[in-house]
Length: 305
Image (cartoon, rainbow, N blue to C red; front, top):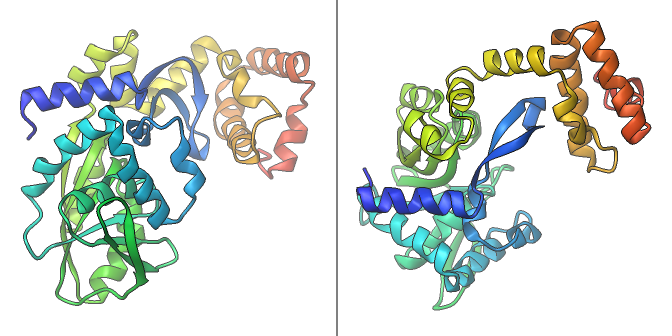
């Protein structure tokens, strides 16, 4: 566990940079799921989103993380991460991170400890990076090493699907070992139990829970309820408030991916939960605000009920 001082410091950093943020108005997350608070651990880089321009190039992204050490906020994060991770990373252990949001954290740890970094890609490539004093010095495609122990450092633990359905089967099928993953933040909503069933010990610097939410949320009761049972809480919210609080999430000027989320949200949530009166009120608001017909959105993204 982190010391109380480091725990409070990291929690304060999460709030200060908006890596955890209670939303004034709810929005739509991945897979069309309604969100009432926002978790984006990469904001700890405190770089105004510059990390995104490096795409899926781990060399460039980790070099950016190294240069971000000039920022005292991110430097504090790495100073908290390093001694915590040292407890689980032995002398001959390989340090790894999965595409792509893991890389700033796994990369900065490897750099500070003068170790190579193994960047695992979704297309099954693995890059071995080495460092000089200021940045990535070399990158080469390598294979998984049988009998070698890997420890992954990751940004956020949700349900562990990127591990269980991602890199873990391939790594183990080739005879390598992974028993520990270090997370900056855990939603603490079942991911730990799923990973343990697969022989993985998850270690999280910060875990979401009642104490955290009651301390940092304004709407404490709802946030705790939503954390404990997201589906039931979101359903109750929609029945009570209707869909108008989500109106901004249907703005047709948004990127295609976000419009697709809105279509799925309407199909899977609003169409099934709202009353006829609530649906009609929302459709009228869409036309008045955006001149948007919900049927066109659903057809475009093949999300018809």
